Image (cartoon, rainbow, N blue to C red):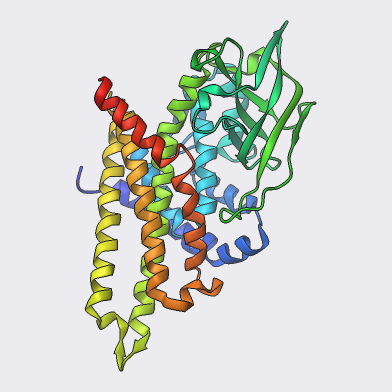
Length: 378
């Protein structure tokens, strides 16, 4: 519980080496040019990082949620945007492995493992964000197919991804009327909105996913009719851990940059690292990150064990880790002074990337709702 095994350390070191060699040197350029590095993502997939907790018999790496947390923290030291997209792909892959039919697993998982197919997760809509059960995308049964109509909002990878996990309404209002479908990019009637102009996460595209009479085989249904909301929430438990780990990795990278800068920068005749006020700030940031890391690992273990506390702990960990990561990056920028505001140093990019982590995978306000309901109602 309180020490990583040699296997854990090997997984973490592998991901960190990949981040240092293939992601970090390019991160500022990708951000500036809004480049989606599919080739580098596929290199990560070749190392087993596209289907981390998919079962080995289905082509996955068969690792644990703690392994995933270590991987995503390490990758995010190179670029939180790239690491976070890989988290989304992993979430979809796991849903197929956990809830998909044998046919879906056979058709999709081997190609998801190598990222021959890139996947996106489609839950949010223009008028259904935190209140996801209010989604209005419809799926109408027509013989051996379903016909989908609706719009999904803020979809990472939209237009570039090959496969879309779509939650649509097959029944009455509320969570019980939602069903999950796998929709392929080339399906007639599927189109994409304009590429969004974003504060951060610029190394991955974000667009609307628009469905107008999209006909999907009934064989592409994930789980049973009406199971979609439960499937979506189960996927988000792991997604929240991953995005928390990405936040810690980004915050740690920003702190490391600040410490290196403080050792070199001089003011009033000495290194600014020698000023106690800045030393205290470094200590507080490092303590916050370590606290978040410990909580995230606890939640990851609970999810692996399918503990009844897992959803509550994942919500707690997501809230704590995303707040700690963003605050760490913001404090690191302040330690740089005016130089932190310049793009060349890479800290302002981390601040921009991490800000959205407090919003997506369920806002941090919704995380508080989940925790409170779990405590009060149970």
